[in-house]
Image (cartoon, rainbow, N blue to C red):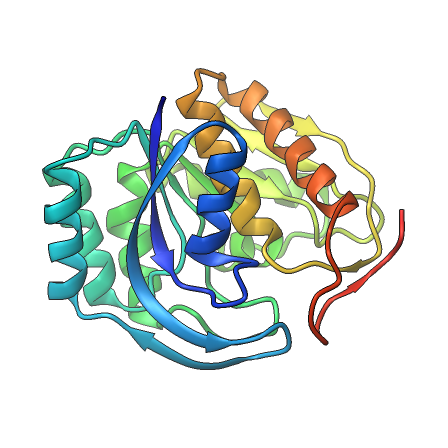
Length: 254
């Protein structure tokens, strides 16, 4: 069985973060292991408090875990501050982690800031060049690229800017588009489109689910385009079967 590592924050609702990643890995037949970067106090309506872990504590998680179990792929989620990202960079290099998928978690679905400004700069300059793929939603892609995305042409330009940061693949998830929810994959030459319908409702953790599915499919031997479509279908089915838990989730019955 392939092993995948998730590096990110804890979400006590288990609807996003490391808890969601581990559930996705398990459902796709990949064994999940984890390094926690931050603890949060949150529910479906708000993030009440973030407790970033020290670089020392993150580092000792890496050293104790990866000396024993070698992952075939990894993904990052919430990396709150520069010290955290520097620690992740050090360990990605030290343990030669491959198939690294970066999900640039910048804000929560409830609007809470999940990454400091200095951390974002370090992510762009030092971590993205080590990655296999970056999977960003449209607001995240706008922040990373500095380009307002309001058309397919501007989306492609944003993807090109992110690609030039040093990653191999750029996925821009279209859930924030007005009338459709197509996802886009840029491989440095071509922009591939996975068309999809737009579902009404508010869904927590879809970005985490997509990126953890994407790295799972890479671990299972899918090529980039196959992983794009498989991840999109996985998230679509998850939305179709979503549970209405808590006061912050509202769903359209489909």
